[in-house]
Each structure stands twice: as C-alpha cells, then as structure tokens.
Length: 238
Image (tube, rainbow, N blue to C red; front, side):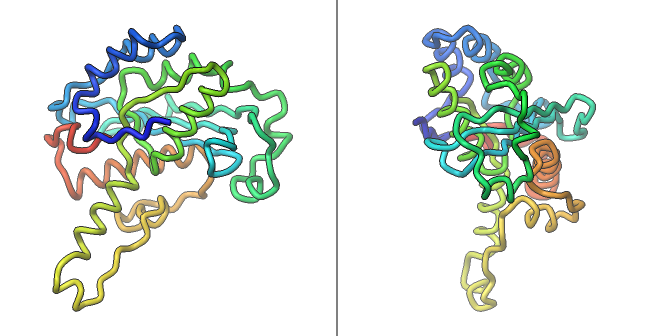
C-alpha cells in the first residue's frame, strides 16, 4: 500500500503525469492526466473538493466503502448545489457495529452500485482539484485498497488532511516550558471537536455528505485563523 508522504513526493504535478503513463485503467489514466497544481500555487487560486467515506469498519484491508460524500469548495465558498453522495454495495459484510455508528442499513444499500459502477463519476469530480479529508488513512487508503481488489490497480493523489493540520496546531500550542507549567494538553482533533474551536455549527456526525461539508468549512476556518490566502499549496498537502 502507498503510504506516501509529501516529503517523498516533492512534485505532485510531475508525479501524476508519470502515473498517467504507467496506469492500465482508462478511468485512472484520465484522472492522472488532469494533473494538479504547481507547488507554489496560493491557496486562494485552488479549487478544492472535500471527500468523506463511511465504511464497514476501520481496516482498509478487510473492510470497504459503503457511502461517499463530496463537495467542491474554494476559500470563500462551499458549493453545496454541486455536492454528490452515493451509497455503495460493500465488498465485505455490513456488520451490526458499523450500522450502529453510521446508521446505514441493508435497505439503504439495496440496489446500490458497486464502486466500479460509479468510479468514473467519482474520479471526474476529484480530477484536477485538491482533495481535502479529515484523517487521510480512511479516504486515501480505502480507495486505494478497494480499487486494488476490484480493478487490480490502486490510486494515489495529494490530499490536505484537516486532522493532521489540527494535530500540528495543537502540538504547537501546547509545547514549551510555560505550557508545561500550565499543564496545557493537546485537545481532541476529531472533526466535531475541531469545529467547536472555530465556533462552527454542530452537525450530526457519520453521514458522508454532512461530514464532507463539515471538513470543507473546517479547512476554510483553519486557513483563516492560522495561514493566509497566499500560503502555497505545498505547505498543506501530503
């Protein structure tokens, strides 16, 4: 599995062009050909797409995607009218524990397509944009491993991880002797807890589309508070 870091891939634009040449699947070839932004592109010029998956469990080697939500956005706006949501037939069994977490039941999934059927649509929505997620081990790893099982080829792309950003901010705010004296500890970096620190509204969790919108709003807030519109994309993506 590709656990690339931004330190290993210094130039995502060139890397995706290479992937376009080595990929065997025409859908993935088109996705890679769309490319991505140059490293020094300011955040104000970027078209983002927030992506969220609901899954049958937390292990991408054994579990699979059952719902996908995405919404395009920029630093100024979240384009809710262009949002998309799909239910997906899982490759493994839908367990009772996961139904308790996200509330997606067998009847919700009745007649749902498998990932291959909507792959072209999904990749069209992501192509050329910067994907934003809250905890990249879910979205990037699940899509990679689920595709390996279905079409015998994985996928890799740059992401901005709002959970990683929040974790870095929390570490910085609790380091140093004074903070140690004050016993200042890092706070929770879960999506809902992170949003509260920026006075963003509370949404019901564990719906792929709601969580995608929540992630888009969180990144807008993080950039507004801790970065600037002129920050280069290379400072945030992984």
